[in-house]
Length: 251
Image (cartoon, rainbow, N blue to C red; front, side, top):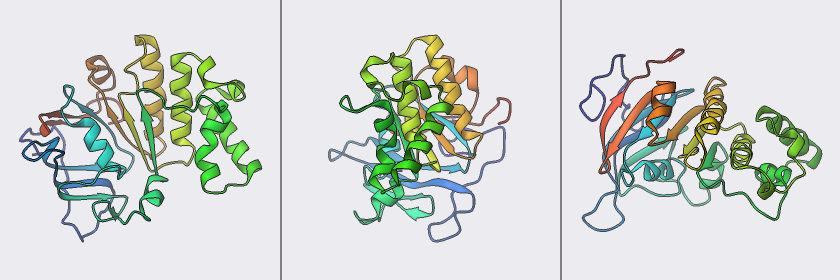
């Protein structure tokens, strides 16, 4: 039985004790709570495990804890209680100097794109490569390849604000994939898009998992959950109330 008391239709691995082998886990949460105000919890006693190459949805009403869980995963927050192991590192105990190295292995896609208006599409996507000192010729080739994956190589010299909403989100996905991350986090990535663009963007994100990347998508869109039928974790009031196994093809 998965945390939250809801039995899945497939076998579930409980998180191993901290200090033991992480096995194939990309991220593990051990009795994690997060409080911003004394007595009030954004997350409460959450224990979860996400495997390498797994695709999972986080769902629930606004304020349920979806974004907090994601921020804890890429070490933008520290838990108030419990421990988090991400890619073999105890994210709860990382020193500030160690956080950037972990984040380089995690791609993040936001609902509002967070693109830099004064840089071209190519520059936005390649920013992470610039930070780590990738030679310019190598970086430009890598950016071209990733933009080609999302069908925007012909837009690489344009300002991102000149693109449609769907194109801007594809740029944001390319930016998240530029370092070939082990984990991709997408926080309401289709919240500002129409239904047709929603499916297009979700198909791009789903394809990432087939290449071995662990993908976590936060959404409250039931039509997406119904279409993709991947593992779905429902949060309410900061607690896991349901953890339903994938039922779709290739699950």
